[in-house]
Every structure is written in C-alpha cells, then in structure tokens.
Image 1: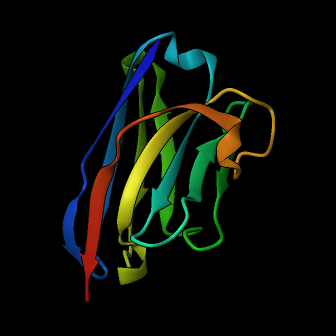
Image 2: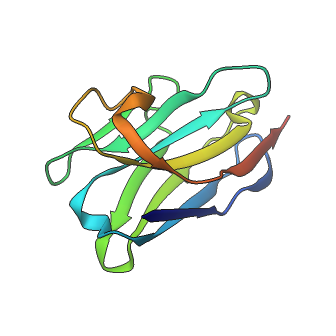
Image 3: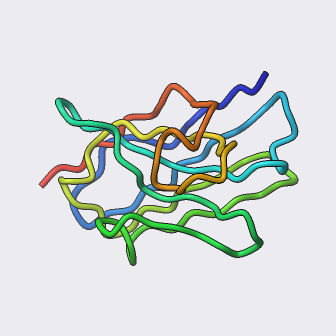
Length: 124
C-alpha cells in the first residue's frame, strides 16, 4: 500500500541541471531505502542511483557517477535525484522505487513499489 509520485522532469539543454523529487505515501517511507531507474525509448530499464541500507550509503551507475546525487528527507517522505552536467544520453523516463530486498541495488528485482515516472529530455 505504497504510492510514489515523481516530479521535476522537463526539457533542458546539455550541461544543464534538474532535480527530481519522489513523494511517498502509505507505508512508512523510512523503513526501506529508495532508488532511481530510467528507461529510454527502445531500451531496457536501467539502474541510476539508490540509497543503501545504512546511513549515508549510496550507489550509482557508472554512467552518472560524479554528475548525479541521490538524497532523501525522511520527515517529508521524499527522495531526490539532483542531476548536473546533463547529457543527451540521459534522456529517459525516470522512475523512483522502494527497495524491499537485500539483493543488489542495481537490480530492479530488488524493488517492489514503483512510481509512474517523469520525463527528462536533454537537448544538444
């Protein structure tokens, strides 16, 4: 009984920045870490970033490491994805999800609840 709503997507030029937000309702958000995935047209869903099980622990895909930052505000039941130095290759629908299994964070099977996504388009 968890609902996730992403926001903050849009159109931005290469080199620009966006911050995505994911607001959770229903079950206690703080009980489980959150992650971000993305899916480009004609491609499989891929891992972007995730919170770890311990405080301060984070994971990033090689393609976004150093450019994207995941963070959360448990008091607001919200997770964020700050995206800097955006590239056209970052164009995709971005999804947040609740991690419910101790399997690797990069695997989508580690997550049970998903939002409906927000579109990010980076032009050259």
